[in-house]
Length: 114
Length: 322
Image 1: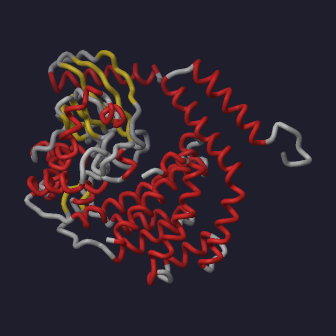
Image 2: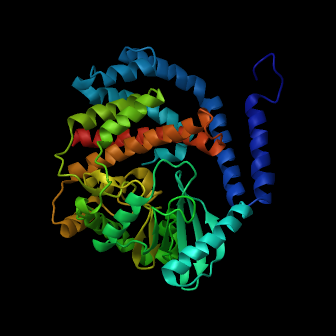
Image 3: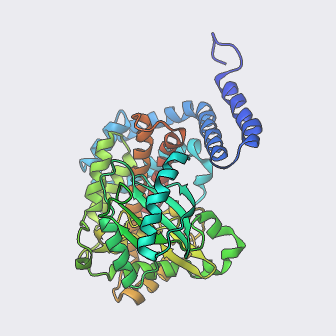
């Protein structure tokens, strides 16, 4: 809960809408509309996971960027593009693995098993 | 679907079919979901079932090159739908079109990979696709005027830049791909979107290669690498269309094309394909974000970009280590 706001929290609100789509809407529709309802549920699941995991991921990412000597992704991307990491692309990739795994953990955790 | 549009199409289409087959009946005309630049219709006529593809209003690309490549592919022994009417230069249906004979079978990847009906097909499908890709590469480019040679890496570099988004993993991929380019052969005909979803599959395996809209001249391994991109395995366990290994498709491809290729080169193209699909996902999300087409489905695709980043990390780690 984030004061001054009351319950439901944002996560609880999103969850309530998600349940309504899954339990009521999806049972009433079929075909393309049902597919689009499923897409909506998936997006709300992403929102819920980001609410849950986002803050600690942001902290980890800031530390990661600091280790690589950059303030944000844009600056890091530009440096890689300019060849400043060519000497050890493997090392920067190892750092980026953590960032990408965090993104996938929010967007579609099932994708992680390889 | 717009009934008025169907009404307006039925009569001129009947005239087109009468001219081509002598039978003017057109029944059960219905619109299917189509690509970005064209609409797709299915209908029955006296002699069977047919598919009409017609350019969307304002589409930049006509159909002349596609009908030419379809005919050249048929001559080269690639299984393709039979072209019944080449309307690429015709005004009969207002916009350029073509009619092909419908090929029975399934295009939905998940069904092909899981349904009992296709259990037999699954054993041979990936190698059949590799053979088809090899036959495509044997088409004489001179037979298909209008196909343009492109540099996929340079092209998608420009596309990523135009999105204005920062993706450090994609930058690593560009650096690595640029410094590890396999030797390029002379430009050959390439399908350009060679994967499950664009294949009609029946119990015996590959029945037809569809959607030649993105055909161009390039390295023949582009098609083979694309079918190995993880997104196009649709959850299947193995690299090639989710069904077979690298060695199996390379062997089939070599036997058919008479050209050898290394696994390293194939995987370079797989990595490029993964990068390319990631960038295409960004573009789809931006179609929504920029308001061109507001759609929660397109928006959600933006969060699939990181799946490709993850696949690239895994792939590049393997390739750098080996």
